[in-house]
Length: 568
Image 1 (cartoon, rainbow, N blue to C red):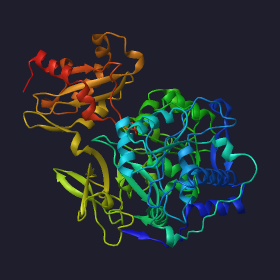
Image 2: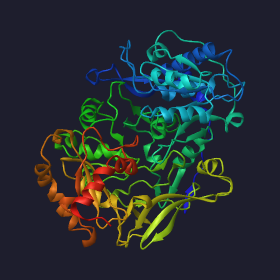
Image 3: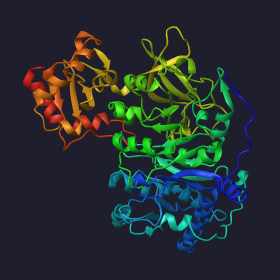
Image 4: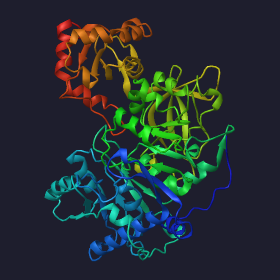
C-alpha cells in the first residue's frame, strides 16, 4: 500500500512564476543555449526573464485578440517555431512551453477560460486539420515554416485567423513590463483547462486531451508519496538539473519545461532550435560534451539510447551522468545494461490520455542487474492495477477510483460509465521477488502463425536490433506458416549488396534463433530490407508504427512468401 504525506497547497502557474520573479528574480528557471549553435554553450534564464516574457506575450495576445476573443471559444493553436532567421540572442525549443501556455492562461482569464493546443510538428496536414476542427480553434499562431501548414488549414477553415508570433528574444530581454493582470484563485481556476495535448495517432487520427490546472495536484501528491519504502520515479526528478531531450509538444516535454520547474524545482537544459528532429545520437553526444558539468541527469526516448550505446565514445561522454531517465517505450536490455554500469537507469511511464504511472524509483540494490524489473504502487489513486492475461503474463489496466475523477484523465476521454481501461501493456512478475515486474510486450505486438503458435514480435526485434548495422526491425507473419523480418539498416549501409549485409548481421539472427521456439525461428529467405525512400513509420517518441510500416511493404512481403512457397 502507498502512504501519503500531506501535500503542499497548490497555486496557479501564473501566480507562482510572478511571485518568484518579484521575490527571487535571479533564481534559475532553465539552462538555455546562447545561440543557434551548440558550440556557443549555455546560459541561465531566470524567473525575472521568464516572468517578463510571459507578461509581454500576454499583452501581445491582448492587443491582437482583444476585440476578437469570444467566451467559450478555443482561442489558440501553437505551431512550434521553425524559421531560418537568426535571432538576436537565442531561440531554444521552448516557445510553445512556458511562454505560450502561461501567457494564454492569463490572457482574458477573468472573462472566460482560454486554452492552448500544442500539436506535434511532424503531424500530417490531415492530423492538424482534424485537431483544429475537434477543438474548434479560432486562432492559429506560428512563425517561419510553421505558418505554411496554417495557411493550408485556413483554405479549409476560412474563418480562422493566423497570427505571426514575435521573436522570443524580444519577450525575454529589454525593459521591465507592466504585469498582465491575473486575479483568479486556485479554487476559481482549478478546473480551468491549461493546455491541450494529443495522442500519437498511431492507430488513427490523433485525439485531443485536455489538461486542467488540477493536474498539479497529481505532481504534488506523487512527490509526497512513499510506497514500499521508496518514492515514485516521477518524484525522483525533483530538484535536478536535467538534459531535457523531449520537445514541449510532448506531454513529458511540457512537464520537464514548465510544470516540474515550477512545482518540483527541476531545472531543465533546453536545446537550440537548430537541433535535428528527430534527434540523432551524434547531436546528443555533442550536448553531453558541451552542457554544464553540474547537470547530472538526462531524459531520453529509448530509441535514442539504443543508438548512443552502439558507439563507445558516445557512452564515454555520458559517464558523468548519475541518473538516466527514459520514457515512451521499453529499453533494450543490452542498452540498459551498458548504461547501468555507471548510472541509475530509471524508467518513467505514462501516456497523454492517462498521466504518469505509479512506477517506483529504481532500488539502488538492483541498479546493475535488475534495473528492468519495475516496482509499482498498485494501490495508487491513479487506478493502475495488474490483471492476469495469459500464462504468466499480466496486463496493466486502469480502474476507476471513487473520488479521483479530476485526476483520472482517461475517464474523461472514454464513454460515460466505463469502469476500466486496458493499456495493452503486458508484464511478467519476478519468480522470486514478488511485486517486481518486467515489461513483456503489448497485446497488439503478438504474432499468431497459421499453426496457432503465438509469440511476441517485440522480444525478437530487441534481439535483432542489437547489431550496430541495424537501425530497426519489424517481425511479422500473422496467419502465415512462418515469420518474416523487415530490416532497416543504418544509413551508411544502404548501398551494399543484400547478400553481403545479410551475412554480416546474420550472427544476431542465429543468437535470436537459439533463444526462441523452433517453429518461429528465422530464415535468411524471410528477411526483407527496407529501402531509403520508405523508412520505418515512427511515432514522435521513436516507437515504430508497426501496422503502417508493414503496409508500406505489403507487396514485397507477399512476393517473398510466394517466392519461398511459404504461403499459409
